[in-house]
Image (cartoon, rainbow, N blue to C red; front, side, top):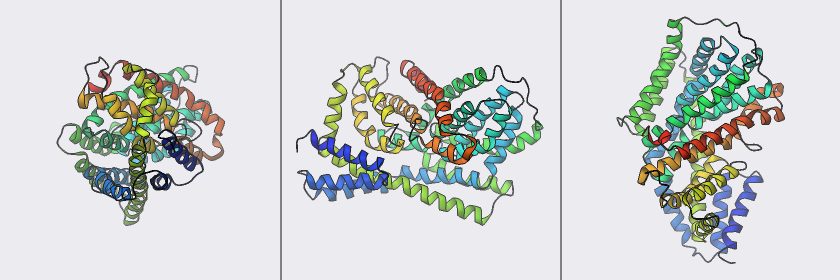
Length: 435
């Protein structure tokens, strides 16, 4: 089999296995094993894979932050602390139709900064906000799009598991990735808010809501905000590594449950079990992707991708446009984790060797590229037919929203995300200015 056909066959087999519904980790590892046997790679290559798995995944201290941040988010969700804070924010900001829409965005930010779990954010927002948005006069597609987009902020706004994985793959400091994501996250919130306010312009002027007193608002939101500030502040200020800060966040979440009287052994065990399951799924995919990437490169896959990219031209922004376009299109059928683990290690050296004329080089260039990838990958949660946020929303609301309504609702928000992506490319200071 030729050097061109071998990597193409490997990619096609892997994509077919994923679309057929098989476990992603098993498909990635299985494809690697099959193509070691059908290529001219020596059987001893299996030993190399074991070494890479140990070095890149099992002994990677940075990855300890993933289960800790997941545990922190699950504790806040399982105990009901997050819901209490969200209801308080919703009552405080829900005095008008526009205010109700903006309050959903604020709730999304709080969930994103406190948990980083898209599924939990979308489900909670769907249960809490959909009835209120309907009462305020929003049409169902707009409500669906706002909830899905707001919940998906959890994958970008720190502390984000995706940013930790991207930082690891790009070999860039995770604190810089966290700091670089602040500007894009705020920009997305602004453009989302502008769309919501525009959509609410003809809705009834007021919605009756019992506003909480300042003291009650402080009691409901203060502990959660203090946790977010302490975790993110310690990372960005350089006082703690992401791994250390994740431990601080997990411990702080437990203290908050004690403060509100929500702590119980059953709650703790439920969160711990879900953390083990979620972390295991992530690590299995990372192990499978490590195997796939090693074999794919060995059979010439990286050279094939480089040739495909440069076929459109070698001008830096043309190359970047092709890379971003490929990631966006793959987001329709693949999860962010597979794209990050398989393609980012191939794309990163290509981009690192380019001069975009924006004064960025070294780690700063890779952080800029990494945040562009993160914003691009965020759309994979919203793009039909396999957008995970769409699945979470559909499952949470049942028959209250139809699938076509959800698809129509997310389209304007996908367009806004692409607009923000273009702005970040043209104005890199929106990313690097926070580092």
